[in-house]
Length: 256
Image (cartoon, rainbow, N blue to C red):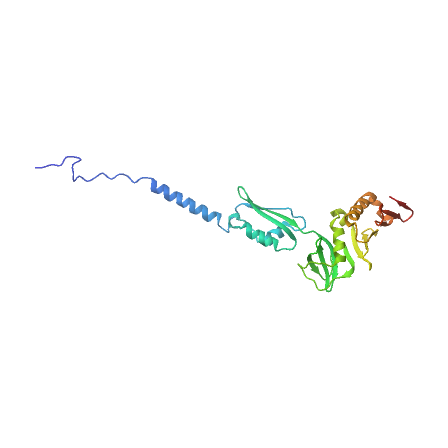
């Protein structure tokens, strides 16, 4: 009787236990898919958005303009889309949006600074130093920048640019003032001859005169108001038409 020896042809092969490699591959794939779903989820906060350079516009308002949701997932945000949305707002002059490692988006904005109010056919408009209309209201609730008087603008709207020469002269003067000095002025009056007169919140008259040497006159305005300090109430007027500005006090007069 013929017998088969171990290992001869026709013997059933011994089955080896399944390897771990397929299982590890499946686990790795699952982790990748889970990570992808997580970073693209709209329901989890991933990373942070930081706003820099804003002073007049609240950070929450910047988020609203940019379309950034309450639950931030920076992997779902487009930096180019954020920049485009920000630049549509007239209050923002420039904007840069960049990603900062490892998980932060930085929004750097440069704001348009309002420097004056001016009357128009339906109320008042707020202007920046270039004459761009930033806001339009029927009544001014808070006078935080001086009002231009002696001229009334027509039907103008937000986004329009005012090219009226007399108004541009006023804006050129105001644009050279530092923020502290600008905050001390309540009105800039344009006289019929084009001369300018400014009034401070302490009712001090500043005779700016013809629209020449406006940068120099703006510098002198700031220097004098800082120098007199709390004595502004004793001043009747300041005249900037001379090579050396003239200050007339209510009780006495002297040259400086």
